[in-house]
Image (tube, rainbow, N blue to C red; front, top):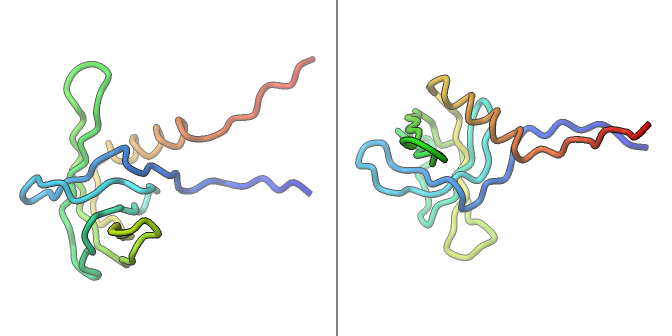
Length: 119
């Protein structure tokens, strides 16, 4: 029997880069997002329990890119199935309203919507 499922996270590997908010160096890529956190895919393991200032640079079709600064705490980090890559889960400590708008936009973009029934 079909059960309606709610998708809480969306896969985004190698699409949106994440930068260290302190020195603006690349730290990894968004793996998935939710309203309360995110998963980052990195080439280096990240310190569990540490707080990070993260900087998202969202490309725009027209005009300047959207910059989103976040404060997040690393809850876990483990080696990815892809060699020399690590997955790290973060809980958001602070995010601007633009982050919520990004999450909503990504959910809309990556969600499957049922086709209207023909009459």
